[in-house]
Length: 143
Image 1 (cartoon, rainbow, N blue to C red):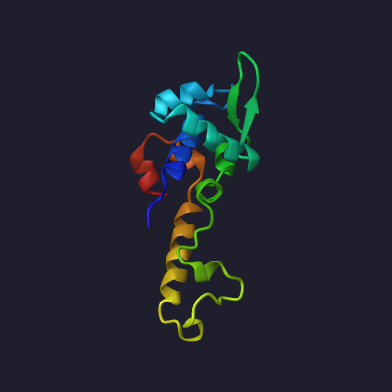
Image 2: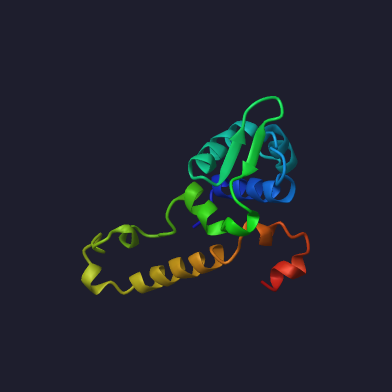
């Protein structure tokens, strides 16, 4: 299992906005250059982030993007879910009835995948953008 570039770049861009874009819109070009992200790809990412209500866009010569809420209110897990989808790492976790394979009644591995999903959610939901915008790694390590 691997996080895609979409999730990785999107989170980096959101942390960048949390650090510098609280009071004024930041042009996408500036974010792309600072974070070494291809601008056309970042445009696609920001369409999704805007639709999800995580960023706001401002048009015009002094336009760009801003966080839609305070960094403390934007959870890393929410960003990852918007850009990557569900945290379900196997199909059977996504099915409401749990039926996706012939061994469902007797599945010996499903509990492992449920625990992995729960662990990922706990970590991702345990951080917000304010946490990640801290420059002092020792502060982050103690969260």
